[in-house]
Length: 350
Image (cartoon, rainbow, N blue to C red):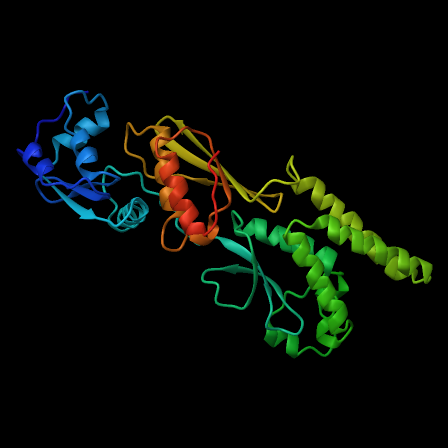
């Protein structure tokens, strides 16, 4: 591929002399002021000067450099701030030569409300304005609904909204098909219902053995008291729990909240696949198809994906404690520090 002729004589040497040895973000423009590229740097002078070395062997970078007419820079107080600013600028300005993650929809969560006497189990997406316990994120709404369906079979928590709940005079279909315990018409008291809520929370926190132990004790006590119908209900709950455990558990019961990320390139199409593991349970996977300039390496795609996926203004809540990468990346330590800051506790990139 031939190197394009420069559209404007950019005096790179003179410009580099004006740069500081500090972290920041740089923006490259062509002669018609179109934004070509946004990048971050721990050392702006060193990073920008690397674009103008005679030994450049990356065709994508050669094509980019040949079009540069001017460069603007923004100094930041830290390396992490440079990462965050770069991510936000890429999403806002959509430069031609940057990898751009197009799917920025908020992730779905499971919500168990806390402001209700009889808490509600539901799917939640968006800002966490409702008081309650949030579990996730899940890769898609199907995975949430599938888990909620399983929880209803075992723990019989209501899913209806408060208007529907407060206007019932008799049980609805969910009670008839054994998906709800009927708190709306007082078929279960508050104490017993709260115990169901506690079991559901333990399950979502990965404490299935604790739930199993209590259900086993309750089943034995019911059988001794000759309450055989109740004992059968506990038996069915235990069986359903074991079925879910077998389908969702991962190899190690001690595994932390983990995302596994792999980049695959085929015939000019790039897919980033993310596997979600929470509380020792596999929640599912999700594929992303970012806009990727020709000639971009999988490692560069992975670095850009991590920055845009986890470090945007709305994304910090989804950062897990471990992120397993399918490629070696140059900025591993830098990204790990930024992710740790975003999460508020240590993040590992093993």
